[in-house]
Image (cartoon, rainbow, N blue to C red):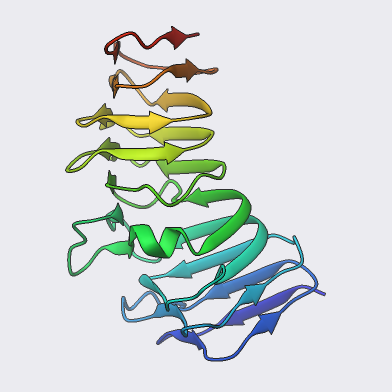
Length: 219
């Protein structure tokens, strides 16, 4: 009961869609950079807890009073090699981007964003997603960066970065476990004004962790 949908110039769900197996969308199958994936306002993509994969140049989730995506493990991939991924605020014209409000419309047993082909992932002012989250930017030179405005309310989070490393340029509030992995000799810098639990991690270079105030770091 696998559903696979490929399109070269975008996919738009204008009505509710329920699937009963692995669900795969590639809305930029010709890699032209013009294929976005969109769900219209007040519509729902439901996979009945099956896995979901979406490859797109960009994503647009219309406003909804409930989740626009309800699924099992969900993987979101940028269609262009080295394409930057932006989560929260500050998206550029050519970025694969999800705003904070759009992230809040995704319910998944695990949300995986990125792989070994995209560019750097930047997280800025994300406060609406609390489920398990994995961010992958493992291409040579790619990084995972938190910048701009502090993010908070994040649950279990795994960050996998390329040789660009991992940087918390702003405070990040994490209620679950943080796991960090970097390639080569790249460094990881973590800043938090909240209690922090550091899980299994592999850092090629140096790890600098700063937990301020009366908060604790548990390893």
